[in-house]
Length: 321
Image (cartoon, rainbow, N blue to C red; front, side, top):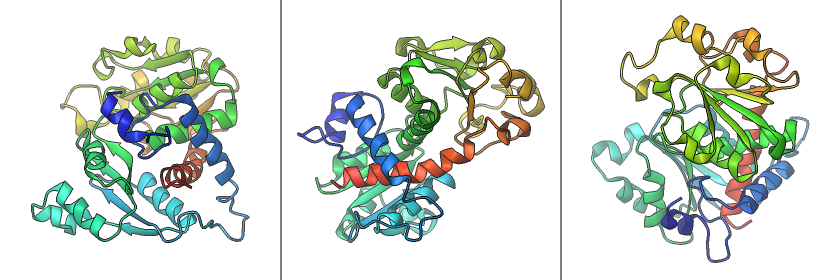
């Protein structure tokens, strides 16, 4: 992680000020977030009568989503409301950015409206970093996905899910299948897993969808799905991001599924107690079979639920609570 990003994320006391990337974040910071999220899981329990805590009462959280989102935007909104914050969802299509106003000018105006936390998703790599560099010290940024770079809260909720079901990262064998090169989720997971001591991280997919520098991060590359899945404790499959690639770069639909789809037969090669994960949105019959997505090893919906607690943890920590 470049020094300026590290200095942006952590204040002089090494406390989290912004969450922009998992690359280079200290292990203690990651564990603080995961431990805090564990405390918030009880708040998200459907049996709990009052699902709110007052940690962000009087604070304003602005959701700035310049790309489409269902799970991330909605769980951030729920998380902020569970912390008793006021939540403003900016409609980008009707905002002044659609009239030519610059991103930073828009942000300045929202700061003048007493924004405390910005949750930012942007198609441009580094956009949340530029916003964080521009802001006064009392305003915080959480990266909800930037280009093909990072998606740190998705990475954190995936790590939380793995720890919940598997506990010890140092003994985990994690297989990530599919479109790695365009996946900010995969990158955040790889950095987080590495920091938390996972020694067996596998990426599986066609050569055109695997970055050339993954070996520098201590990751094993497989071009054969059966060999890559063998004995894995966690199997995560990713969406093919057609919007970020040239037409014909990879086989599509049924052809892709035949070669790289996660089927019951392929899952049988993993450890018997392996869990199945997917960050969503899922394309059934392309990257994953319905029998696997809905099967007993799937924790895909638990990932979504845990996402609320993890995002509560991140917001409460950056706000100093």
